[in-house]
Figure (cartoon, rainbow, N blue to C red):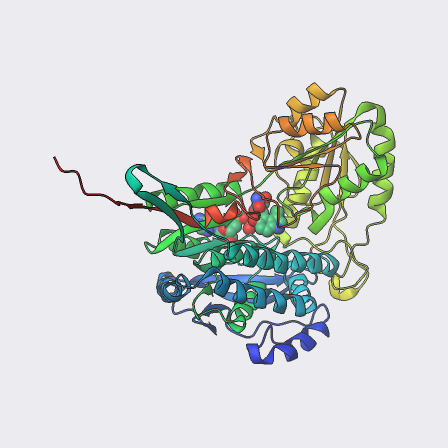
Length: 513
Ligand SMILES: NC(=O)c1ccc[n+]([C@@H]2O[C@H](COP(=O)([O-])OP(=O)(O)OC[C@H]3O[C@@H](n4cnc5c(N)ncnc54)[C@H](O)[C@@H]3O)[C@@H](O)[C@H]2O)c1
Ligand SMILES: O=CCc1c[nH]c2ccc(O)cc12
């Protein structure tokens, strides 16, 4: 039996314990809320939620969902931290973020192991997520000191200037697919701008946000600057409705996003919504086929397909359809499914049983509607007996798909690639844009004019040319249409975590009536 984490001064012990950890051994024993720089049990609760180890199907924790009182305590505590933090210079804030980034880098394997145990993604991928996480902290540390306003000369020697100021206590609400990374992508710009943050992870993945909270404290953040409250929808509602919360940044589904927006509207709070997608990936006959095939795999099977921006509608030009299908099936057959903590595993289990059933249900309905299951799409039981109750399935390739099928219209959030064919550019653009979503898109072609022409016409927040699912922190990420608004990452995100004050300075006399 292992504890999930230890106090900051025991961090090296934590690293060695976690590094030695194997699938099926982990138990959560410590409190899971974080307030005032320490782990705490919630002051009150509104029910419980179970967190699983998806690889084995074991329950690793039963969470107490934080009630209204606990949420209020967390907000009050964060307001105190905000007072001192918001008065610090950008350079001072940067020092804390840089130290936290250094500690994340140092504990990369331990954090990735924990993420894998709680989420099910392969440890190979989880390490990449941790890299993008510390990079995000470093990036916003770099911007913190350069946050500045303008000086504007006015008639008669008068002038004005603007100040970029923090918002206050911001709430981050996360999805379960990138638990640690989402916590970093929200907290790093928030803290860099001088805000405090209360983060609520998905109840399915409560673990890694706590590791981040402990790291921030150890890096020198004042107690309360980054608090964690655990819980589900009710806890999320208490947070969004709290009058002293200044902003909500949400990552999750469209229906929940709509509710968050409604609650925030009542309190006139700004929101960032990072929602779902059904992104098109367009493969032209003049592409480099090998790259296009790899791109389609990355666009569909990373994190067991549980990625919001996945390119799940794969449009392939008719002239290369057969070659593409043959190659993509060959590559998919090679994906090693199994224990996500093993170094050579590339596909672990899905997040939980109901989600696995839901994904398999989409495949069943695709068949009914006339699609062909060319490969996979079945429950999978690894040979290792300890994994037999895990939530595994084989990656699925669907062909003979049409634009009106459910598998082509709805977000599946699992390893299911729908292949569609097209004749020409004009036609494919119209079909690619025929969706309520607008998170991302991809285009594979060696024709440079075509690549940019297509990118310009796709109604999406991110368009990949000759690659897919690469998210460097320097580039803004977010949606068009029902995939949300606001951005994470990139310089622009500073604007989403700050407000602009204008100061007018009179150099003459006041003119009266
Ligand atoms: N665009 C992006 O950046 C992005 C990233 C990851 C996931 N997603 C999307 O997230 C979805 C999968 O994640 P999920 O199942 O965790 O989504 P979800 O909407 O069910 O839950 C997301 C979070 O919202 C909380 N929540 C649920 N109801 C709430 C309410 N009424 N008020 C406040 N909080 C509430 C949940 O507890 C969880 O923390 C997919 O649709 C996926 O596309 C989007
Ligand atoms: O799952 C969708 C894309 C994504 C990957 N990592 C993160 C982190 C934070 C987000 O809001 C979205 C994503």
